[in-house]
Amino acid sequence: MSGFERRGVIAGMGALFLGACSKVGDSAAGRSAFATAQAWHRRVQRLVGGRGGLVKEYAASQISPSFRGNGTTEPSSLSYQAHAATGFADWRLDVRGLVEHPLSLSLENVRGLPQRTQITRHDCVEGWSAIGQWTGPQLSTVLEAAGLLAEARFIVFRCADTLNGTPYYESVDMIDAFHPQTIVAHSLNGEPLPVKNGAPLRMRIERQLGYKHAKYLTAIEAVASLDDIAGGQGGYWEDTTGYQWYAGV
Image (cartoon, rainbow, N blue to C red):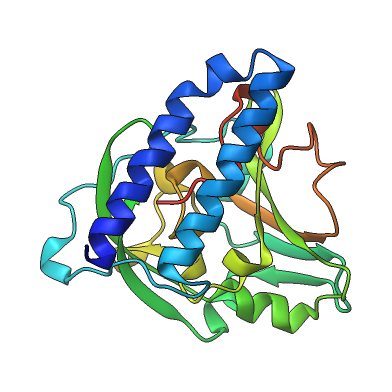
């Protein structure tokens, strides 16, 4: 079995776990079994692909003719609307938490860092996929500039969009944070990121499903534990619906 075929098998297993999440999450025994399955899924994917294994990258000719927006496609807050009206000229990305040097980066700062461009496939938990070209600095570059403290274990992403009155948030561990294809994207298909796709900044966590790719990014926070982040499961959908925290594809 090729690496790409193995990736498909693992993605299929992940989809089965996600599809069952609302049922198994109804009992303590179910939640325990689900957590065990999720940990197994994470170990299998990293065993198959390696800690630094790359997802498939595509040719420019394979880019999808359109890349749909999903979930929030335009944050409704007055603050976000004001930023959008000025082309995000004053947008700031804060890097905080367990770091030696907290940062407040403008879009110009973000674009001035070493850049990575990659053409990858976005897989949504709802069952659709699209191929797009993304450009931005590797998250590892940003974290290294801030200087992670030794006790940092997870990276939390804070966002400008809200769902049911709650600002969106997501998180990854240090393996995915320092993966070479994990980038802070500001461009899609060679153009500034459209609002429907997360302008002005969004995460690309290429080894995980789409809900992990936080849009409308306002802050990157290094933490020692996820226990005190909202419901403690590491992300909005994980806390509210029981989605897997590790959503590998």
